[in-house]
Image 1 (cartoon, rainbow, N blue to C red):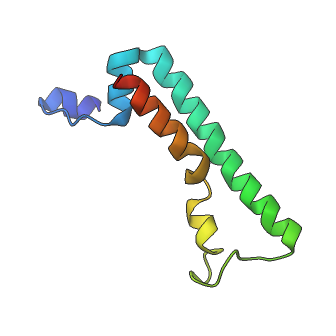
Image 2 (tube, rainbow, N blue to C red):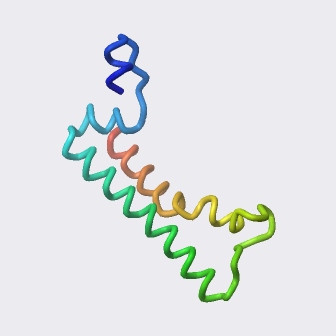
Amino acid sequence: VACCVLAGSHTPNFYSDIQQRAGWPALMIITAIFTALSILGDLVESLMKRGMGVKDSSQLLPGHGGVLDRVDALLPVLPCALAVALWLNR
């Protein structure tokens, strides 16, 4: 972001919107929550696979652990990101 601001062109994004509308403390808290939820999603999906005794959740993406391994971190984060976006645009 600093290089874009110095160059005079700033591309708004989700995190810059949070910082501008809610401040740095809110940005740090929201980012920490999203990070924790992302890790939790990955761990829960791995726990489910171990409980079922399988290595991959599907054969659709061979060698990648299945489709769930591609989106497991997004599943808990996306609803929260939507809630934050709606809160910012109220």
